[in-house]
Image (cartoon, rainbow, N blue to C red; front, side, top):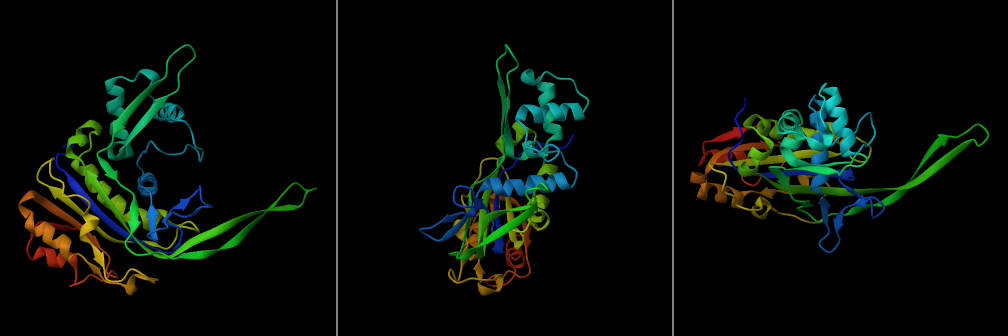
Length: 314
């Protein structure tokens, strides 16, 4: 059995979005989510986790938060289908510890992010809920630059109706950002890892999934145009250390009028200093960087290796 993850990690993930809609707001005509006072583009953690779940499913892993045959279903129905697929007979509203352990062994997204599984009551019985607090969590992402929104154009879809009615159309708005360099901060809790049986192998899989999910999954008409640019996970020597939001240690030299990754330089010097000053607390650094990202002083992984030799290049 794989070893349960026992460290803390902090995550910095940066990707860009060009002429697309990174995360539409259904309450605002599906416009890109924005903080209009600061002109910063926002992306919810739910959107990022959806990319990861869809990627994991695409490479053969079972995930709990997923559709069944293309349809959204209740948690109760999802659990029933899961146990049916595994040829296990269980009482859904009274899961035994062995049933929960089996669930966790199969559902990688629950090991990552946790889940709430409300169980619908059978007639004459009370409902129930099984809660897992996930060890991997993100707060909302925001852009490092001030973002301009492309003025919407109306889009029309035409479909064939019944023979006597001919064709009919639907109308909508197509909202996009010109360019957004989006940053996420996340953590992996070694303390909480034991509650979902998150393993060291799972964390390696998570690194791969986060870096590869957007290029593979964000391929619909409104989402294409997003590219991972930088990923770093700081793995600490214990399950107590956290530095805090790593985005506070990242700067770009130009915030307005960006249209491409070549239009700015990103400065990781404060982040490098934080790492070097606290290197006795750090077990390893896991780093991915895109070659098109202009980093002040050159490659971050090459710079940090001069003072810290436990760098794993992803």
